[in-house]
Length: 287
Image (cartoon, rainbow, N blue to C red; front, side):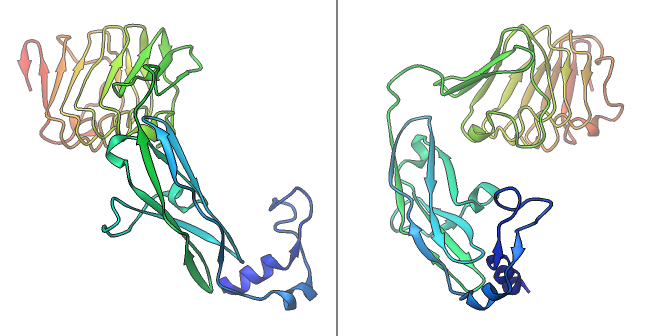
């Protein structure tokens, strides 16, 4: 069935908007063209080029093939003698693969497996060379709709400053998510009112967070799967901690509240907020 589908798609004439659209689909089927389709394994028409990139920048590798119904899967290896490993995730299944340039991936090689129903072919490998950063400017920066500013500094600290709140995100959509495995700390400014849904999800190297006085809201799954996170300090100003704010933060051992009581809006069951066994500290008692 998959092969038949690919042949039918290849035998269409585009109609309506360029490419596939909801009204015409892939286009008008040309019956004579079906007989002309010659199913063949893919061939490589473009290899990824070796890249030399400045530390902390975004690197883009691209590959292209020729054939019917092509799919792409990227692989990498850490050295010439190492085994090739698949790069998981949707990004690794595109004809383009993006990777951050940091010391620990200097010298990695990348290649792409281009495949269709009738076979597959590998591109030649291309290496990444990381060179030192020549300025002290942030790696990247941006502004939220509220006016709050953010940046990732050269020391790999994510900073929020100005006045306002972060945007709400779905999983994996925060603007710094691309650098999630490299950010080492979070610095939240005193003008921040709220950290909203999934803002810091998957920041794998952050170990502790201090929320300054003024922060009132921590959103759902805000710190989802921050696997190294061990401690948090919650200010008196906090009014709401949403369910599952620290979901799958399995290293979390201590949460310190600076107020004598929990926030006004707070899960009745601690298990809906923290992993089991997390110690919750109030100034006058330990629970």
